[in-house]
Image (cartoon, rainbow, N blue to C red; front, side, top):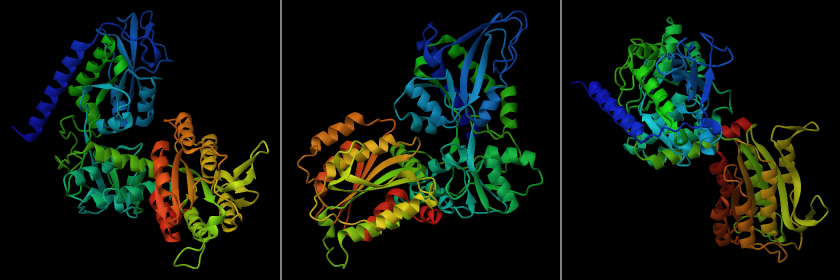
Length: 564
């Protein structure tokens, strides 16, 4: 017996076992609340309301029909839409497409929860759900497609880590939304797990992609990427085998080669998942089995082939692809992958930041071994750091020292807004926000005989970022200080921590980046506060140190180039 058959049999047995267990523990009570409501529609004769987005027509034998909401990804959605309604169950499938992050968010929140979810990857589903909601796996895999690299000429690639680093010649889409790009990140983590690349190489390529995709040019679809390979604008492109097969079917004259790195590749598995609140619903159970049975039938195989997909066991259906059974990487360490994914998402997100710079009198002290003051090295570093913010980002600048500003009510406060938070390329009376921020940083001056009002500034900065919160962005308060909180009239440390903890929205957090400037900075206090308020701490004694902090936190190279 071949390995492919053994694998297929094992998967089939697992699916049947899981489904029997799921059915045995399921109840007979239907779900009628929230997003899990089952819609029951009555019809006369062969009427079929055109307003309903159903997979096929309702048979005349069905006087009533129950609609099951299925959220699926891309190619698999087109297949599930073809599943017919039969007179035995009278269940129609309302199939819609949605980004996996949104579907996972709906499941976690309990709002607009689908009855059935078919993402492109069980790994992606686990990452997005993040143990915040439960789903039942009815089928480990409905279909399969490996991540591949398509080129005009035959090429040899060693690892996915090398491929991701080569952003100049190898095109890639956004891993947050596109299957092959996501698979490539999973493959890099798998290479580390199998000791095919080092841990130091884990984030390098992903960081480059995070800092360029959607920043240096528009996010491209797999078809657009392959068009660019054909036209010679890219040497290669990261897509799925299914993308390649579909493209070749539609562009038979295109001369393209498909390959996977020598290290192997990971595969998209299209699992069939049922959110916990629907897992005991008999109708959902029948619908889930209906989908699974169809994908295993001759009609289902034909549908898979039309979309360029393999069977759940990895059996290739199309002769267009030259790949037989590519070497499969083992995903292994889930924490490693989770850390890589979180790192990518953070670096890929736009930045919405407020930079508050200590302007108390101690900042006038000369830095040992230099001819510059603490303020000068901080301002120089902040000026260089401002170049790291590409056009998608937003930035604001404050100075802070005791009693230097006024709030909206006219009360004296320990901070002064120099430039409000705005998009860095936003036009402000004929000048860009970036220019205004850089000018404000250049003109920063120390307030003589002043002390640091650190805690009040941190809390006010937190409130300001919350008021200017941007969904989907990394919202952060950046504090650059050389001292301690010297304001006896301010809130104390514990009140600062408890207030931020109470007001923090865990689903929409405002984070902190605390930079201690010079060896006089109260690093122990910063390290005590940071983990309790969602922050990170860095120590910097020179301008170069501070610049490295900005580069580590917000990216370098591509960010900087795109900002200039």
